[in-house]
Amino acid sequence: MAGSTASPAPGRGSPGWIMSGEMAEQPAVLRRILADGAPAIRATAERIAARRPRFVLLCARGTSDNAALYAKYLIEIRLGLPCGLTSMSTTTAYGAEPHLDDVLLITVSQSGGSPDLTASTKAAREAGAITLAVTNNADSPLAEVSEFHLDLLAGPEKALPATKTYTAELLALYLFVEGLRGGDGAPAALLPDLAEQILARGTEIRELAGRYRFAERMVITSRGYGYPTAKEAALKLMETSYIPALAYSGADLLHGPLAMVDNISPVIAIVTEGRGGAALQPVLDRLRGRGADLVVVGPQAQVAAASGGFLLPTDGVPEEIQPILEILPLQKLAWEVTIARGQDPDSPRAMAKVTQTR
Image 1 (cartoon, rainbow, N blue to C red):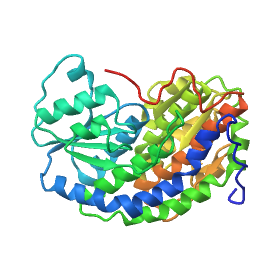
Image 2: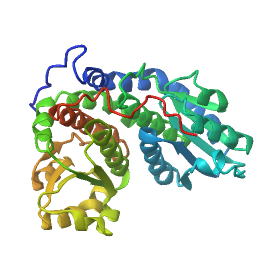
Image 3: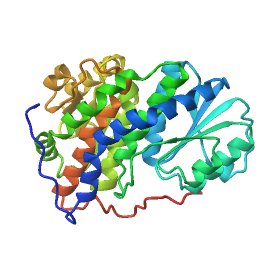
Image 4: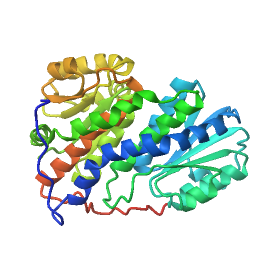
């Protein structure tokens, strides 16, 4: 597996060439955040930590919502702080007036341009919250209404399916949470080189994509830190290839949805090496028992026990940053499946770069 080589990049103007190029930029984006963004992220974290927030709320949509869910795991596990995902319509549609003194609101958005995110953040700041925007646009309306801002430094993102901004969000949020707890985020230094290795293994992904070209639906599952990866992978498959892809926590999968899995149902399991992967093991056993077409993205032992998969280089990589690597082969899988189905991942139907929800 590790010897597979990257496929030639699609030529300019051909289907998927923009998304392909932005996926390939991710190692460089991760390096830029570590070299140029980390000091500012740490300084912001120190200023917010001095305010001693008692609760954290996360505000996001779409891909950024999956990054926010990752942050929720980090905050609850690494900081021990209660953390929740906001329902923006409570303020934007219903006019609720929350009491948010000493609450940290983190709003995550690639563009920083969605009206509901901006309005919700503005309302939270007026209600006493400490507001932090995490965006790829320092001049965005969201950054303007927030007290603090983290710049993702990912460069312009032109493809409609977000790739490089998602991994940038994950890394920025990890470094921020580490800054809140007084850590330096040093383990993240491993990520750019490992990301480069994963993205170079294009042949493996193309072979895997052949299994899903004619799929009518897919199930993607994980637990713990890997669960946001499952949700983001499902989103990428749905918005590019239009395959209905259902993402479940392994625990939730056992509470009913397992009944729809049979021996022709494609299932992708994201096995994060660590406690999350151990918690997923009973789910994997049940899936095998049902004869599911099970593919694993994860460590060697789990890939070997499945009917195929993608081996992740997780040796020495802490569990909490493995999601930054896990999503890479799944982004490429969505791209390859879409191309194989004769569609253009750069131009998904019914999508816009800034979603005008209110």
